[in-house]
Image (cartoon, rainbow, N blue to C red):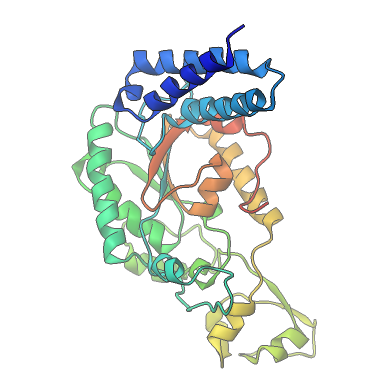
Length: 329
């Protein structure tokens, strides 16, 4: 059996190898993963607490590198199994992202700034254009079959810049409301399909409902509390109304309302993402890009995506995650 000193030396060498560019080379990568499996097997049988912790860490790293092709989110155009390849992309930096970097969500005194259907900052546009160069290099030979995009403006903007140019002119694009962000803040309230059509005339929004984002139920007493004034609505009927659009109301204090607005329930959020990932089985395309959001990508992959970060895995790898969890649960 290997000594603790030997285990430490091997673990250290593998950790150092993890941070080098050579890990991307197929032979080196296979050797690294083989080493992880061997070391993990050795330490898992160790009775010591340190041995067990090391084994757990190595198992985690092996799963990470098998699924996403290494640290740092490098784009891998070869799936880990001969099935559908998925390329996950988070949108670029937005006005809300910039605000939250200085005013953390949930911090004391936090108030929603009211950035409805938030847009990319100049930095976010630059990030998407930089990603465009990477995508053109990595997908020059293989191309891509389909781009799935959340209908929120920030993801549509990201897709416009990231998949710009003759390499992607003929690529089919599909707007998917099921991969919209979980409704946390005003930025997760979308725009009417007619508005989106004006902004992005090359996309099809005909399949979207007038309000395709999460719709909350508000009681009559809650409506009065929040000082809503409804057009052509009467309180004589059902005391619960479905709020279809912020355009239906006069709001005397937008910040107050959205500071109190309930989040989309985790159960509903996870349920629609589970339906989405299962629907991918029936898609005829073999290589699909998914332009979505932090919460969506975290739930589907367990990975924390930076703005405009891209990473890939096979559909089978994603489906091995038996139960989806919303962030924070």
